[in-house]
Amino acid sequence: MDIKSAEFVISNTDYKKCPDSKLPEYAFIGRSNVGKSSLINMLCNRKGLAMTSSKPGKTLLINHFLINNNWHLVDLPGYGYATAGKKMRGQLQDIIESYILQREQLTCLFLLIDCRLEPQKIDTEFMEWLGENGVPFSIVFTKLDKLSHVKGIESIRAYKEKLAEDWEELPPIFLTSSEKGTGRDDILDYIEGINKSL
Image (cartoon, rainbow, N blue to C red; front, side):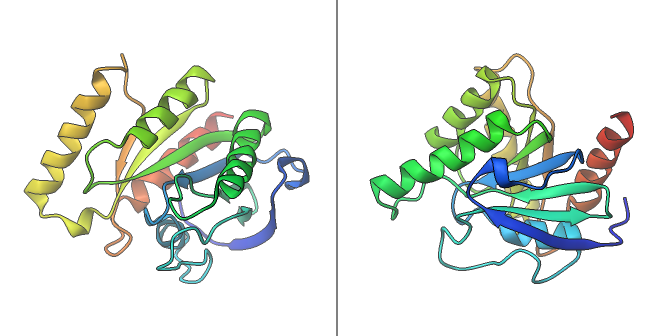
């Protein structure tokens, strides 16, 4: 897929105020500091489209971007902020869960995982929740450039083995590096394939 246009549409905290369109939506989510904004900018080939920050927790809103005038890329708040107070964590959870469960246009959720980490309970529990609620999702391993080729393969294999203990069938998995552009075509082709089938 060729990205000819990518434009910011709206930010809000309520899925009911999201764009009133029938366009398919592909949402991106992950723990704080997983590299979500960098990945979105890399996918869209636009440096400042999604705001990146060294301080975790920059995305506290549902952000909609219109891609090629025929689908929405959605930047969701992250989860697992250690620095956020209990009230804010609760608010973020409500924003995320209501969008994921209630937004009819959500076509696929891309769950971002830092490939350098062992499986984290917060991520595996989130996957279980998605599975229990029948939410279609894919796993996107980020920051592949931070590991050697061999270490990267080992890390992801170990992760898949851990997931296979609880999942009969694993969701689609993508390996990415925002620095090197790795995985860009794979994700965009996957989205294009789904759009053609709708």
